Image (cartoon, rainbow over the protein chains, first blue to last red):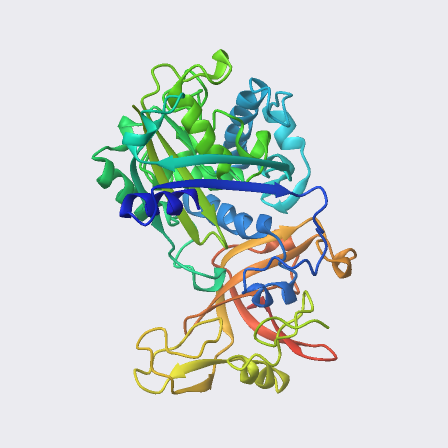
Length: 293
Length: 143
């Protein structure tokens, strides 16, 4: 949403927009009948398919079939993300986890385990979008929007052309083109991680590795602070808090400003970062490329 | 029972039997016929969920045609947690995405088979589960 609101500034419909997102899940009714519905649940629920975990488990199951991805590979994302959360004073889950912790965590919707799933959170965040000219007068250093994109390839699981390539492919291509940059120019990535599989598919769709090679890309510290592409340096939805994409955007802004996060999780020489948003039945996707001024 | 903005019953976990585009789908299932919309203009199948206009050419004339009931598993998962009270005694249970022979995909369950034996690409055929208010299409492995 921040992505779209930002666009209003760029096309001149508004000069300054504050993009706010807050969530309170501690009192939300998690039982059947709560009013937030996408509109296609009646083609899923009669067969016992109720949850976001299920839709993403379908993607994980298919990714494992097509590319040989294993639960242990998805664990690498959970472990690295938790490490970043352990360095973030404003994260919910700060105790580091191991591969064994992941593999022993209970199945929720197989093949996804508890530690493949994001948190239910109370919280909020906001970013202010305005012209570069006006931002220069602000007391805090601004960051600039270099590129953005969005793509929504289907509505329902029933009409998804594939579940192993999602809207992120075309969305990121649009954003890279606008920015005149490519995946290798990115110093870090804050990618929507409602489930570990979501980030793995997005890493592939964004061109950080080829399709199906996400399982190798996430190994050997490559996605951890100090590695080639630090991923979800705040702890993400998996370990910091689930406020949809809001905290991925605020984290990218802080990383690019410098001196705003704990020094242990500051990406060195952070000049450009990429952010993703994702939603619906794995149906919606938005990309932002942000740069330090 | 509450209603949504289109007047559809919103009892969670149930199909909308009176949804205009889908009403024949549920009525045909009651007679143990799995059917799909076919465009009267371009002759292409609509796929699922049912809709008012042809997704290929936007024509509004269509007919409901019977399907073979055969398909293949596109992806499958196993629920180990019950999100709805009526599933507490059913976990762990399978949910699959079934790609039908004529095109079109359904969320359904593979029955007559342990969840761990369901495989992607497995050939399945429809069976009909008659409930008091409606009939659900489910699938079993082709022997």
